[in-house]
Amino acid sequence: MFTKPISLIGMAGCGKTTIGKKLAAKYNFIFCDTDILIEKKFNATLQDIKQKNGYKFLREEEEEIILELDDMYEVIATGGSAVYSSKAMNHLKTLSTIIFINTPFEDIKKRIGDAGHRGFAMPDGFSIKQAYEERLPLYNHFKDISIDGSLSVNEVISQIEGHCF
Image (cartoon, rainbow, N blue to C red; front, side):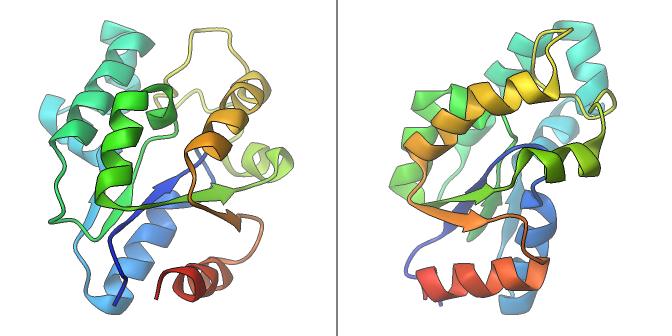
């Protein structure tokens, strides 16, 4: 068993949801994806929520959802923009070990393309590269552990297990 729950942070396309689901299934842990919680709250996709209300609204909702989390969840996958809220990240730190899935930009770009369909919580016209460069220092600031996101899902899980068991 983990010493405490884990929260996965990183860019869209780094594998937070895939890794989180697989890790949770492996150990029969309770999994939470904050993006899915937001979509359920509004009965809409992140992209639709962003188009209707703007990216700042999406970030505020993400913060609110994270602040409502408790230690019931053993694996938490956050949205890529969670790190814009110190309040949310500090809350996650009290609940969990923060694991940054540190994925090279080239891999992110291959996996998500222009991210136009993902409800990317950035201003219109902001490129994936600009978001990556802006967020990287935030991910590094809030992380407890950094894992190489260019590895396979199973290798990432193995590294998480090595750090957290």
